[in-house]
Length: 103
Length: 409
Image (cartoon, rainbow over all chains, first blue to last red):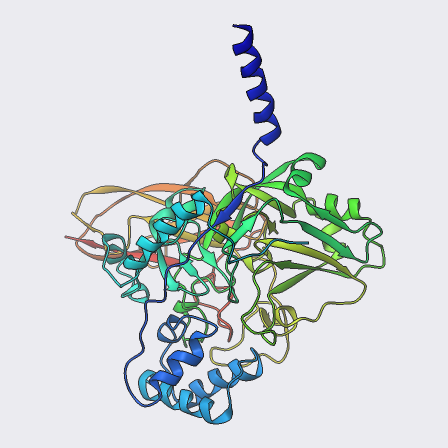
């Protein structure tokens, strides 16, 4: 009986020491991207380059718009967000987005 | 010193969640759950629901970084459950593993005693305080702007209300001996961009503002539980009354600066026209801008859902929530005649001026046809909602009178 009590007391001490703030690791695994862009000239480049930084629903959920909109978006990715993309690649991506997401 | 590791071996717990999220991956292909179909909201048509780790089925705006929207049905009550609370990150990668044995909250810069606090330090060395407060994304409802604007096309679910518990920011800054020469204080979390040239997500508040506001917290609990990782575990900043952009998640560094902060996310992004309404003519461009701060008054009808069918003579319960930027809601009104006559509703429990305020009413269908029910809140200083939407190019601050359409037959 005494031994049991001592054991229980020890458990309580450990519980208090551990407490709600005890060391804890929280880990998650994010689901994969679910979007594949429609086929067409520039689709592969657009898929690969854009997906370095974000999933492609960033494209597909945007309002449709003319070439100027998509050129503006690609320019923003380069100039503001520092995307390491050359001018020629940027042009291909903007053309692809315009071809598929203008209207 | 902070812990941020994406490649350490998964703990047993992590494997459990990993399996949950692996299952969720399969759910990401678009499907048409009843919840989305019943909302009859064209903006949400085709959006998938998915269950991310530690979350319930939420509407996916983007996957990486995750932006997840709370379904409208949750806004019939004051407190948003943790698993249903919306998620919004800015840059990728986001932290996917945090080890409390290694995580520290640093307080540094223009301070006399730089600190690196563990979770135990936060819990045992500072008074624990709580506040019930709405966290709303600046761009909540951006998808409803006309003309439309680029950016996250949220419907109305980028908001939630929770009981946040933790320590006062002012207590931390006093413990660190923040110098009176301090001007701005920056807040940085564990998320880091994929490329060094991408601006890291850092926000700032004026030191004078923080020292005079005991409600600004570093919270380690959300509705009495630890925060979900996607909502900021182990700790996040709580700035009651101000838009969620300041509520930095997975918080790891607080830095007192002796000069104004001019990082991208303050100087360039999250700015509104420098006009009394924060708006310009639809399609126009502001002459000058200021950082977005306090939330305007909003209210929503959560039940019945838009598109609900009922019979002439049927009486139904209307339920929803209202909130503002910290003055508190004085009354919520509803109209079924286009805003000619507004009827008072019954307000629910007062959980403080920063909280959602529940409201309810009964309504009887008197004649057949489509009926538009409108809701409108008035706060403690008389501010309310307009019937014409205000517009700005970034799609912020929406607070027009919202509605649901019911079909009576």
